[in-house]
Amino acid sequence: SMTEQVHPVRTLRQHVLGIILILAVTLTWVGSSILTQAIFGSRDYDKPFALTFFNTSMFTVYLLGFIFNSSWRQMVSSKSDSPPDPKENPFAHTEHPKFTLSQVSILALQFAPIWALANLFFNLGLRWTSIASSSIISTLSALFTLILGTIYGVERFTLLKVIAVFLNVAGVVIVTFQDVSKSGGESMLGDFMCVLAACMYAIYTTFLKFNVPSDESLSMFMLFGLVGIFTMTGMIPLLILLHFLKIETIQAPDSGTLGMILLNAFVGTVLSDYLWARSVLLTTPLIATLAISVSIPLSICADVLLKGVHFSVVYVLGLVLVLIGFALANIGEVPSSDHNIENQ
Image (spheres, rainbow, N blue to C red):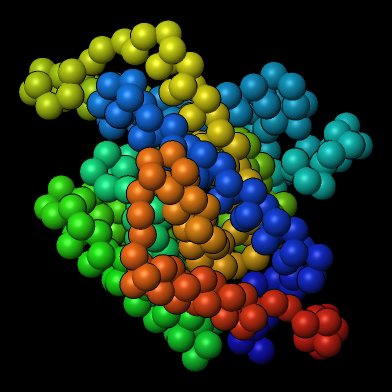
């Protein structure tokens, strides 16, 4: 059946685990947005490119796996494509890359620019608009994901999903208009950057699911570690260029700001992106993307508590539409037990 091609059978337990991971991710994202705005604002380190550089470079932490994990080292030394001996590593079934090292590297090389752009656009968006608006607009990636996912056969196209995404987008539009009427042009630019970020997120979610068939086929840590190395290498010349063009000068942050930047890179990038990538493979790209919308109530609370922002009734209405959209997409996707038996 169509379903079998779309994804391997997921158990309800995996789906629930995926949802829990996603909720953990939304917490880390909102925390990271609060930190990012603090770094740009109160710490006066207004350097979105440098921040993106710190965030992506932090991924290289994962490459410690080559020191601590014998199966990774075997991948480097073995010329053959045969997977290493599982007896050597008790975690073989989860950690075990079935991809060869060169395959993972090629994947990381393709993934790196998409990822860096998503991160950069989001940071630029946060510079000009509120945390709440940036997370609400991020949910547009659900629409992009549904379209791309359907084209590449990693999503089933159902009426319920279309309704879900429609509600989501309607909510986003309402919120953006409320924003513009409140603060004019600058937040409009921030909102636009967030739309571009959403587009990039959709591309990378679909890319991941399309190229990595299951959670076990490669080590996410290794993939992200290599993405870190490639983005770091690619961004250094870019930062130097921006410095000479006087678009963004290179300047070392003071120690307090550096602490915040490192914390932000760890929580908002290293931890959350790992959890998020696992959740995409456990659920579906659309659900993982729509889940970003759950971060909206959290970010609204953050704006209200930290900045005393007031939101209108219309704004809240937009938010409610977004949340209903998320719920509907999940209802359409949860694997039922009889459906699993029939596929086995």
